Image (tube, rainbow, N blue to C red; front, side, top):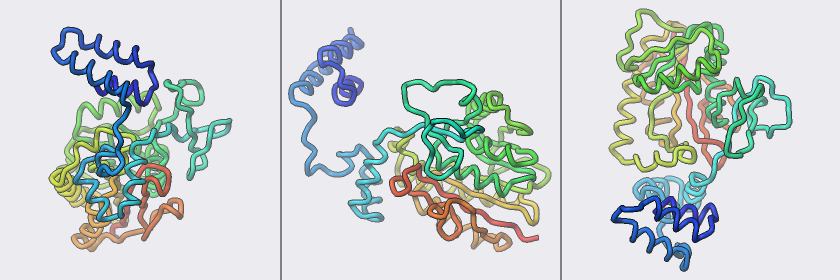
Amino acid sequence: MRIGAAQLIILDTPPHAAVSATVAALSGHRASGLVNAVLRRLVTEGEPDMNGAPLHEVWSHPQSLTARWVSRYGREKTEKLLEWNNSVPGIGGCFPDAEGDLEKGLYLDDYRIIERTGEIPIDSKTRNVYLQDEAAAITGRVAAELAAGGSVLEIAAAPGGKTHHLQAAAKYVVSADSSFSRMHRWRKNSARLHWRDSIPVVTDGRMPSFGSGFDTVFIDAPCTNTGVYRRRCDARWKWSDEYLENSVTLQRELLLAACELVVPGGFLIYSTCSLEEEENRLQAEMFERSRDNFQRISLRGPAELVMDGMICIFPFDHQVDGMFAAAWKRDK
């Protein structure tokens, strides 16, 4: 039913084709009659009038999350965020050779946007490009600058979006993730992009089994993903207060375990793709209260994206995905 509705409302498929093809796909299914009736009514009556409907219904978001954002940002800003989340994201990446006629990104000199045509052309220009939002590339670049020339442990590394930047700058990178399937994707990306001195490890970042420390430990923390709903449309339906609480607990455990693997004088970097204060600023403040031998340092990102030394990217304000990053230096 949703596929048929999408054809009628979004793709402008001729009504007879959208309805008949959708019903034909349900041939023999007991719901075929219902789907046929609903889609034909949609053809004749069009979309329902949403004037006056609650924001969460108009923009198809969880009610509790929408209410949370309204209380924090106000109705107008929340509606802009919801609209952004329902927009079509661009496709792009950092190009080794940034010359050419591709559209430039907003913040990085070598970030380029690829025209959305339905397929990604794999040629000499795109073969070595990791496709990601510019916000993710910014976070990776900022981390790579601190990691330059040293050893790096990357926690929650798969599928490798940050590895791509870290390995280009570091002496070597140990990329760890708790998921075999996600690390399989990491290995495919590593082979395609020829990542150098990068070692994949499947392990729980809360109980890392490493005998020595690293110059830099980078945590690309699992989170509620509220900053990237535009790209991960279905992720919004995982939202709940319990999901947030579980994410915060996991992040805290990762931070407190990972910091022990930073050598004296080394760096700890923490990043999420969440907009929630509990996962970002409050998490950073929690860490600082619990570990006074780590001092926060200012990250060198684009000035408009840095607040109190931390990367703080808000989607529609900055026109890229929502991201957060903070970093500390361990006392010698």
